[in-house]
Image (cartoon, rainbow, N blue to C red; front, side, top):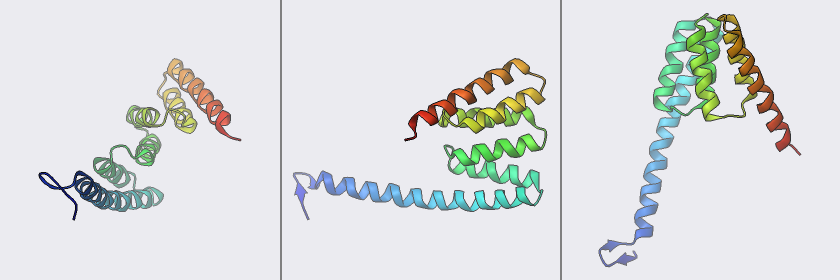
Length: 138
């Protein structure tokens, strides 16, 4: 084993740390996947409150999971909880600014909540996001 002046080499320590972080991350990712699958199943079976709870549990484990925020927003939206849905959609917009569908959903939620100006703004963001996605395609 390579050793520096004070013990194992820095490279070896870095590899061990990377392995530890990735291994722990895999456990978290799998736990989030289990919650996400259960939430998707609950939603498809019309168990909205269970789905909302499970999506939130997913997001406690992996707070940057875009699909979790998006699905939570859609579920809240379908339950008529428009302001909560808008908050979830906004998180997706921050994590993935070119996610055009999320801005369409947000616009619909704003429109249904009686906030037409915010709806128009969201629809404009959707158009810009879609345009930027088109620009990136060959």
